[in-house]
Length: 240
Image (tube, rainbow, N blue to C red):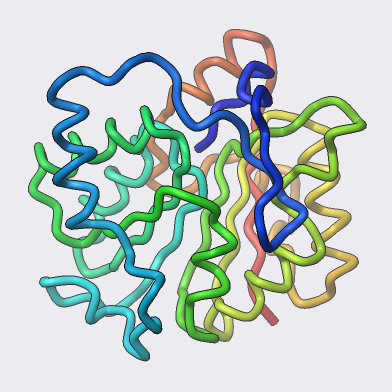
């Protein structure tokens, strides 16, 4: 989950392989323990994209895994840690370029002793292009940076090219889950998914997209939206 503060647009850079953008890489100075984790723990959990992806992604983990899940922009890691603890038989890949957020996740992984988490601390499209076709069971894009100004909409991660990336790496029947409290981004996502044609929106009535996902942990982004009077949408799409 990426921070939706406008300040994160400072220093935004265009990725090497997509029209998507992300913002600044670092906020407050890291504490000593966080710096140590970034030096040692990150190297242990980071994907090695210089090597070809294994045909069986579950081999990335020292524990048995029967499914694979990718979370793009995990923010402080609350959702990723919750799901990895809840689903110990699933291998998780978390992507987050923001240094402070990565440090928080690494601390939680160390605290919980989780062994079914791997991470990437740069552009998510690099991971999507590295992954084998039909290798992921679910992709989570939760409260991504909405880039609310119209002139910045091209920087939103949901795009024609990235939906094609999602479609390539998802297994048949795999899920793409998107959550946001920004109406324009929800509508943007629905329009782009419909135009792509490779996904089925699973909602049958309003309660399906207004109700949080099963086992959903409340997050600081959701709490912020509620404080500011915004409701959230929880969209689920299935690869067809």
